[in-house]
Length: 164
Image (cartoon, rainbow, N blue to C red; front, side, top):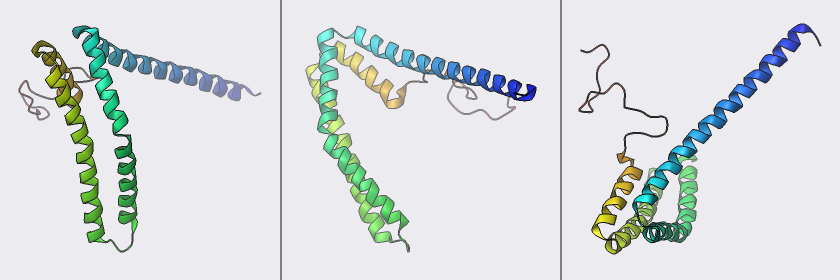
C-alpha cells in the first residue's frame, strides 16, 4: 500500500472512531436525561400511584392501537389524494376531515385517561402528576441539549441582533 493510502486509511479509521464515540456519548446523555426525569417523577409519587399512572397510560396506548392503524390508513388515503393529477379538492377535504376526526379520537382517549387518573389521585399527588403532564406537553424550557434559551429577553420576546 502506498504512503498516501495508509494516511487516508488511518485518518478514516480515526474519524470513524471519533464519530462512534460522539454518537454513543450523545445517546447515553439523552438516555440519562430521560431516565433521570422519569425517576424524579417516580420518586415524588408513591410506588403504587406511580404504577397506577403507568398502567393506565399503557392500557390507553394498547386500546388506541386500532385507532393508530386507522390513522395510518387515512394518511395513506391522503397521500393518494395529494398525488392524483389533477388535484381533487373535494376528495382532499373529505380525507382531511376524516384525518381530523381520527386525531380527535386519539386525543379524546388520552384526555379520558388523564381525567380518570385525576379523579382517583389525592390533591398532593395530582399536583405532582399535573406538573409532569405539563412538562411532557412542552411546558418545560428544554431537553438534554438545551440550556437557557438564547436570543430572548427575560420576558420571552425575541431580541433583534445587535440590539441593546
